[in-house]
Image (cartoon, rainbow, N blue to C red; front, side, top):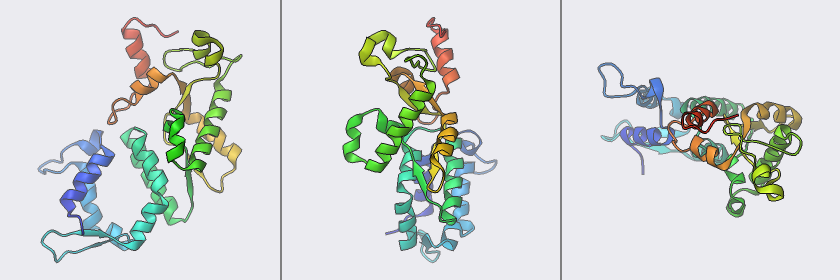
Length: 237
């Protein structure tokens, strides 16, 4: 069973949710710039050359079928793909990350992921990769220690402090927001990775974190959240 180009285009658009220039309709065409890129995968034989798909040009529907090699590539990178497509990153960050993943896959360099969502609901651990959970938990703890001052850690957006508000039960509690995708290369020194990762991690209270991710197509920046808070008279210190 194959997939025609029109359906491939529709599926890719739904998954990636292109914005900006890539979402604009090309002059004199019905295609967006993004859908044209998908069509170019066919026109330039990009996936066929890598052995990931076959494309039947003799068929009226021009069906794409994934090969065993393509299936293996997806399986090997499934954790990375799920991370990029389920964490509400900005489209440009998803696009550039997939470019990086593609390059590293060609170089046979394994990527380890970290998932901010795993740390929001502890129960998810039962249904997800234990190694992924442990990596994410450890990175969260590193970030909390990095941002904690005198036992207190505040939301970067609204300055809410769980310890101040709830007392001892709120001590050291906060969610950690990934500003951009966080990857570790398997052969990378862990301390080097932590220093690099901390540049893209910030503490956020549960409310602000949910507001940041509310619109998948357009996740908000911390500055935008601050502006919303200030414009409604809830001034951020």
